[in-house]
Length: 187
Ligand SMILES: Cc1cc2nc3c(=O)[nH]c(=O)nc-3n(C[C@H](O)[C@H](O)[C@H](O)COP(=O)(O)O)c2cc1C
Image 1 (spheres, rainbow, N blue to C red):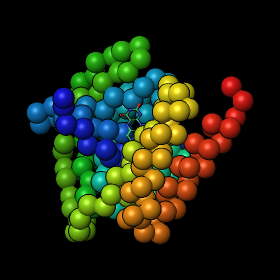
Image 2 (cartoon, rainbow, N blue to C red):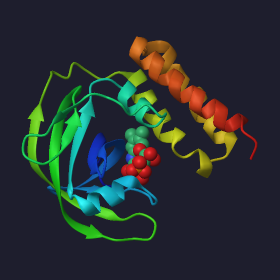
Image 3 (cartoon, rainbow, N blue to C red):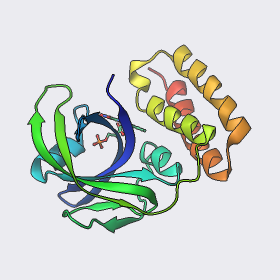
Protein backbone atom coordinates (compact mmCIF):
# COMPACT_ATOMS: atom_id res chain seq x y z
CA UNK A 1 0.00 0.00 0.00
CA UNK A 2 1.24 3.52 -0.70
CA UNK A 3 1.77 5.92 2.18
CA UNK A 4 -0.97 8.54 2.33
CA UNK A 5 -0.62 11.86 4.15
CA UNK A 6 -3.86 13.52 5.21
CA UNK A 7 -3.51 17.22 4.40
CA UNK A 8 -5.42 20.45 4.06
CA UNK A 9 -5.21 21.35 0.38
CA UNK A 10 -5.85 24.79 -1.08
CA UNK A 11 -6.47 25.27 -4.82
CA UNK A 12 -7.24 28.42 -6.77
CA UNK A 13 -10.91 28.82 -7.70
CA UNK A 14 -12.25 31.32 -10.24
CA UNK A 15 -13.54 33.50 -7.44
CA UNK A 16 -11.05 32.86 -4.62
CA UNK A 17 -9.45 29.92 -2.82
CA UNK A 18 -10.84 26.45 -2.20
CA UNK A 19 -9.78 24.59 0.97
CA UNK A 20 -10.48 20.85 1.41
CA UNK A 21 -8.83 17.89 3.10
CA UNK A 22 -7.29 15.34 0.75
CA UNK A 23 -5.08 12.32 1.28
CA UNK A 24 -1.83 12.89 -0.63
CA UNK A 25 -0.60 9.55 -1.97
CA UNK A 26 3.19 9.32 -1.85
CA UNK A 27 4.86 7.91 -4.98
CA UNK A 28 8.65 8.16 -4.71
CA UNK A 29 9.36 11.92 -4.66
CA UNK A 30 5.90 12.85 -5.96
CA UNK A 31 2.46 13.06 -4.38
CA UNK A 32 -0.79 12.09 -6.08
CA UNK A 33 -3.94 14.09 -5.41
CA UNK A 34 -6.97 12.02 -6.38
CA UNK A 35 -10.34 13.75 -5.93
CA UNK A 36 -13.53 11.84 -6.66
CA UNK A 37 -15.75 13.45 -9.32
CA UNK A 38 -17.53 15.81 -9.23
CA UNK A 39 -15.12 18.12 -7.43
CA UNK A 40 -14.34 21.83 -7.67
CA UNK A 41 -10.73 20.90 -6.83
CA UNK A 42 -10.48 19.02 -10.17
CA UNK A 43 -11.63 22.06 -12.15
CA UNK A 44 -9.33 24.31 -10.14
CA UNK A 45 -6.25 22.14 -10.72
CA UNK A 46 -6.96 21.89 -14.45
CA UNK A 47 -7.18 25.68 -14.70
CA UNK A 48 -4.32 26.49 -12.31
CA UNK A 49 -1.98 23.52 -11.68
CA UNK A 50 -0.62 24.54 -8.29
CA UNK A 51 -1.69 23.72 -4.74
CA UNK A 52 -0.60 23.94 -1.15
CA UNK A 53 -0.88 21.03 1.31
CA UNK A 54 -0.69 21.72 5.03
CA UNK A 55 -0.49 19.65 8.21
CA UNK A 56 -3.13 21.39 10.35
CA UNK A 57 -2.17 22.30 13.92
CA UNK A 58 -5.85 22.50 14.90
CA UNK A 59 -7.88 19.38 14.10
CA UNK A 60 -11.02 21.54 13.90
CA UNK A 61 -9.83 22.60 10.42
CA UNK A 62 -10.20 19.03 9.10
CA UNK A 63 -13.56 18.56 10.79
CA UNK A 64 -14.68 22.06 9.82
CA UNK A 65 -13.89 21.65 6.12
CA UNK A 66 -16.20 18.64 5.87
CA UNK A 67 -19.00 20.19 7.96
CA UNK A 68 -19.48 23.48 6.11
CA UNK A 69 -16.84 25.52 7.99
CA UNK A 70 -14.18 26.33 5.42
CA UNK A 71 -13.34 29.90 6.32
CA UNK A 72 -10.00 29.25 8.07
CA UNK A 73 -7.28 31.92 7.94
CA UNK A 74 -4.80 31.55 5.07
CA UNK A 75 -1.45 33.09 4.16
CA UNK A 76 0.17 33.58 0.76
CA UNK A 77 2.48 30.84 -0.50
CA UNK A 78 6.13 31.65 -1.00
CA UNK A 79 6.99 30.04 -4.37
CA UNK A 80 3.66 29.48 -6.14
CA UNK A 81 0.61 31.60 -6.91
CA UNK A 82 -1.31 30.07 -4.03
CA UNK A 83 -2.53 30.34 -0.46
CA UNK A 84 -2.01 27.93 2.43
CA UNK A 85 -3.62 27.20 5.79
CA UNK A 86 -2.15 29.67 8.29
CA UNK A 87 -2.38 27.49 11.42
CA UNK A 88 -0.18 24.62 10.20
CA UNK A 89 2.76 22.71 11.63
CA UNK A 90 4.24 22.77 8.14
CA UNK A 91 3.16 23.07 4.55
CA UNK A 92 4.29 22.10 1.07
CA UNK A 93 3.79 23.99 -2.19
CA UNK A 94 3.28 21.71 -5.19
CA UNK A 95 3.02 21.89 -8.95
CA UNK A 96 0.97 19.43 -11.04
CA UNK A 97 3.37 17.70 -13.43
CA UNK A 98 1.01 15.11 -14.97
CA UNK A 99 -2.63 14.12 -15.03
CA UNK A 100 -4.02 10.63 -15.45
CA UNK A 101 -7.65 11.28 -16.29
CA UNK A 102 -10.40 8.97 -15.11
CA UNK A 103 -14.21 9.17 -15.23
CA UNK A 104 -14.42 8.54 -11.47
CA UNK A 105 -11.15 9.65 -9.87
CA UNK A 106 -8.49 11.52 -11.90
CA UNK A 107 -4.98 11.46 -10.47
CA UNK A 108 -2.89 14.63 -10.41
CA UNK A 109 0.80 13.86 -10.03
CA UNK A 110 2.33 16.73 -8.04
CA UNK A 111 5.91 17.71 -7.35
CA UNK A 112 7.03 19.67 -4.31
CA UNK A 113 8.57 23.03 -5.14
CA UNK A 114 8.84 24.33 -1.58
CA UNK A 115 8.33 23.20 2.03
CA UNK A 116 8.35 25.17 5.28
CA UNK A 117 8.01 24.43 9.00
CA UNK A 118 5.95 26.83 11.11
CA UNK A 119 5.73 25.49 14.66
CA UNK A 120 6.99 22.56 16.73
CA UNK A 121 5.04 19.31 16.61
CA UNK A 122 4.70 18.26 20.26
CA UNK A 123 3.18 14.82 19.90
CA UNK A 124 0.39 12.54 18.85
CA UNK A 125 -3.07 12.62 20.31
CA UNK A 126 -5.60 9.79 20.04
CA UNK A 127 -8.54 12.17 19.95
CA UNK A 128 -7.07 14.00 16.95
CA UNK A 129 -6.66 10.69 15.15
CA UNK A 130 -10.27 9.83 16.03
CA UNK A 131 -11.52 13.17 14.67
CA UNK A 132 -9.56 12.57 11.46
CA UNK A 133 -11.11 9.12 11.03
CA UNK A 134 -14.59 10.42 11.81
CA UNK A 135 -14.12 13.33 9.37
CA UNK A 136 -13.30 10.90 6.57
CA UNK A 137 -16.22 8.68 7.60
CA UNK A 138 -18.55 11.69 7.38
CA UNK A 139 -17.68 12.12 3.68
CA UNK A 140 -18.61 8.48 2.91
CA UNK A 141 -22.05 8.27 4.45
CA UNK A 142 -23.68 7.56 1.07
CA UNK A 143 -21.45 4.49 0.63
CA UNK A 144 -21.82 2.82 4.03
CA UNK A 145 -24.63 1.12 5.98
CA UNK A 146 -25.85 2.93 9.12
CA UNK A 147 -24.76 0.05 11.38
CA UNK A 148 -21.16 0.33 10.22
CA UNK A 149 -21.14 4.11 10.67
CA UNK A 150 -22.61 3.81 14.18
CA UNK A 151 -20.16 1.05 15.13
CA UNK A 152 -17.14 3.08 13.94
CA UNK A 153 -18.31 6.21 15.74
CA UNK A 154 -18.84 4.21 18.92
CA UNK A 155 -15.28 2.90 18.76
CA UNK A 156 -13.74 6.30 17.92
CA UNK A 157 -15.68 7.91 20.79
CA UNK A 158 -13.50 5.96 23.26
CA UNK A 159 -10.41 7.96 22.23
CA UNK A 160 -12.40 11.19 22.41
CA UNK A 161 -13.59 10.45 25.93
CA UNK A 162 -10.07 9.57 27.09
CA UNK A 163 -7.84 12.19 25.42
CA UNK A 164 -9.82 15.07 23.86
CA UNK A 165 -9.14 18.68 24.77
CA UNK A 166 -11.64 21.45 23.99
CA UNK A 167 -10.64 21.70 20.29
CA UNK A 168 -11.04 17.97 19.71
CA UNK A 169 -14.37 17.98 21.63
CA UNK A 170 -15.68 20.76 19.40
CA UNK A 171 -14.45 19.10 16.19
CA UNK A 172 -16.05 15.83 17.31
CA UNK A 173 -19.38 17.58 18.02
CA UNK A 174 -19.48 19.02 14.47
CA UNK A 175 -19.00 15.58 12.97
CA UNK A 176 -21.48 13.89 15.32
CA UNK A 177 -24.04 16.51 14.36
CA UNK A 178 -23.44 15.95 10.61
CA UNK A 179 -23.60 12.17 10.91
CA UNK A 180 -26.58 12.29 13.30
CA UNK A 181 -28.67 14.40 10.92
CA UNK A 182 -27.66 12.35 7.87
CA UNK A 183 -28.71 9.11 9.59
CA UNK A 184 -31.99 10.66 10.74
CA UNK A 185 -32.84 12.03 7.27
CA UNK A 186 -35.40 9.98 5.31
CA UNK A 187 -33.78 8.03 2.44
C1 LIG B 1 -8.67 13.60 6.02
C2 LIG B 1 -9.51 13.57 4.78
C3 LIG B 1 -8.98 13.09 3.58
C4 LIG B 1 -9.73 13.07 2.41
N1 LIG B 1 -9.18 12.62 1.24
C5 LIG B 1 -9.90 12.64 0.10
C6 LIG B 1 -9.33 12.21 -1.14
O1 LIG B 1 -8.15 11.82 -1.21
N2 LIG B 1 -10.12 12.26 -2.27
C7 LIG B 1 -11.43 12.73 -2.23
O2 LIG B 1 -12.09 12.79 -3.26
N3 LIG B 1 -11.97 13.13 -1.06
C8 LIG B 1 -11.25 13.09 0.09
N4 LIG B 1 -11.81 13.52 1.26
C9 LIG B 1 -13.18 14.07 1.23
C10 LIG B 1 -13.14 15.51 0.71
O3 LIG B 1 -12.41 16.36 1.56
C11 LIG B 1 -14.55 16.09 0.59
O4 LIG B 1 -15.37 15.22 -0.13
C12 LIG B 1 -14.50 17.43 -0.10
O5 LIG B 1 -15.77 18.02 -0.01
C13 LIG B 1 -14.13 17.32 -1.57
O6 LIG B 1 -13.70 18.56 -2.03
P1 LIG B 1 -14.28 19.29 -3.37
O7 LIG B 1 -14.96 20.53 -2.87
O8 LIG B 1 -13.09 19.59 -4.20
O9 LIG B 1 -15.24 18.35 -4.02
C14 LIG B 1 -11.08 13.54 2.44
C15 LIG B 1 -11.62 14.02 3.64
C16 LIG B 1 -10.85 14.02 4.80
C17 LIG B 1 -11.45 14.53 6.08
